Length: 63
Image (cartoon, rainbow, N blue to C red):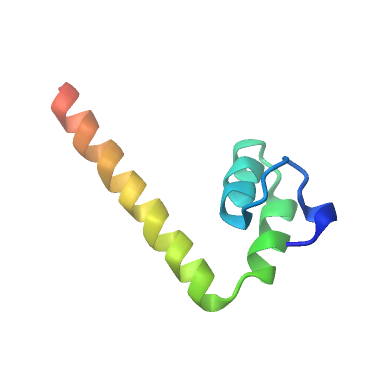
C-alpha cells in the first residue's frame, strides 16, 4: 500500500479497506483490493466471514 493510499490513516491494507467501506468509498476499497494478492484477498474474505459468523452467534444469543 503506497503512502497516498493511507487515506484513512491506517498502515494496514485490510483495515483501510474496511474503513473505506464504512465510509462508502467503494472506489478506494476496490483500488486497495486490486493491489492485494489473491491470497491476501482470500484471507481478508475468510476473516470477514468469521466476523459475520460471530455477529450471527451473538445475535442469536440476544434473542
